[in-house]
Figure 1 (cartoon, rainbow, N blue to C red):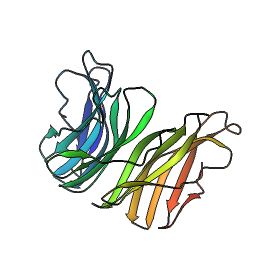
Figure 2 (figure 1 turned 45 degrees about the vertical axis):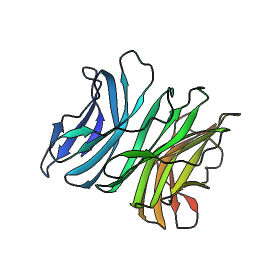
Figure 3 (figure 1 turned 90 degrees about the horizontal axis):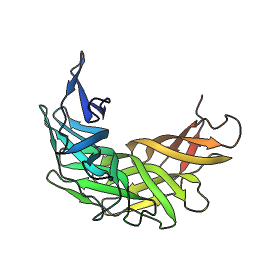
Length: 244
């Protein structure tokens, strides 16, 4: 299953299903009154159980809201998510990982009512409802979680970007879920990088993860992003050489 955003005629999230021979478009379940919606990530526990997440916006509102949809093998249906605070100035889910039909973790970010910057967001699915899980945040930084990978219901790694508010410099971010709480892990940044971020992660075991993203420097490529790969060995994250 693949998900994304439709063209200018729809501006709605869409999905395509692979049956082993070809891709076919499957209609998604946009909320009533939606002006646009986007599905950013999808994870399938089985051929008939997939969860997709993203965000949407309704008429007369300038703020996005979190979105989750569940595939049962025939159609998509919305599953209510939790927006962090009443009146939050925008909320979105960027990544999801499902270990079973009753165990998913989704991550993203939101902007609080003070509009002071992005705050990390995580939610867990138990087969019936989504609940919010407290992440390890720092009020002096803007934090956005972009991707997540779970090896079990109590072993997940999420990655993204952490940006200091003064000066504004982006750094790589990784947080680990133990089933009870999220904690930040130290991640390196390339030498000379002015901005670095991790966008996706995949874990083969609790001691083996690979995260990918990009970084910028003040010299060399003239503002063009460079590829970044980091590897977790069970103890620490290290940068791996990435050809380009």
